[in-house]
Image: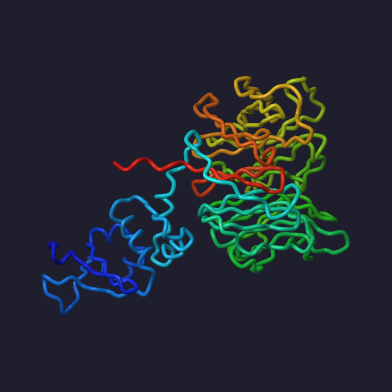
Length: 447
């Protein structure tokens, strides 16, 4: 392609810009520029000569176009003071360049390089229930019967009001849809789980439990999702619908149910985690919801519990205390747990069902009294790094021996009651008035 043929002009809101096909190709096929031109990226008008660049008129903001064009040229995002970030993001959405803007704003997620980029004050007083990171860098915060949804620019969408039903868990299906699980109100028969539009709050589907050909009301607890579009949810009903239900994410139909074994606790589960490599579901019911902790692996193909652990009847040492959270590791061979002192413990699921916990003293970060209103530690695993929250900080562990490598801390807002990772961001929800922090990985310098 010759130099002259490579040139193209844009008249954006009356202001003329001249660039090249090489620069525009950086936008990608899924951008507006990819849709405008043929697959050879030949930008010459039919009646043009080799010395005249094609010109296209776009009735949009020229200042924002200049910033986005410079982003395609250099890979750097430089926003002048006269350009509103909110307006720039809107224009980037129009051109199909949001991914380019996001990648220029922050780099690929690395727990050891995270920096605090901002905090968002809560929209309601009191403690939040949960925070969930969205796949595109946004998040949602559950509080009582409300769910507040934020897009990746941290602009809040209309909040979801669940009519005084307590929200127990929230999960993102994709950037446009969230699933909310609520408690059943006594005598109302209105509990369960629904899919809502993250931008408008519209109820798009309600997931139901069927038992003996009857639709049953239930309290929806912890949720998990699989890569083949299945939804798992802990269900607590009034008759025999205690256990874990499975629904098809696309059709909304119930496709399976694992009923709670006698003496176990699945309907009250605090945490579900689908193990893609093992095709099993981790179910954890933890103290203080129950007096004893129950952790199990369910195989829905064989309809049986293939591994389990409980501290029922087991003596506890002063140091170990209670298991507060559990997570299956990426190798699918072990489960990591954490106690109230943030000691990490590991159980080998390849051994007997009553596998003991191997505690790691190197992970201990705090000794002594718990605060007056403690926020029990939570665990997350992301791209080979293990995260554990404790009071007002989040610890990062790396390597085969899970060595403590960094800590994220911000004392404002009180202890961290929940955190979540997604869309190359970490969100930490504090216990006081729903204040949450946003942690990002800085971009590498452009050489």
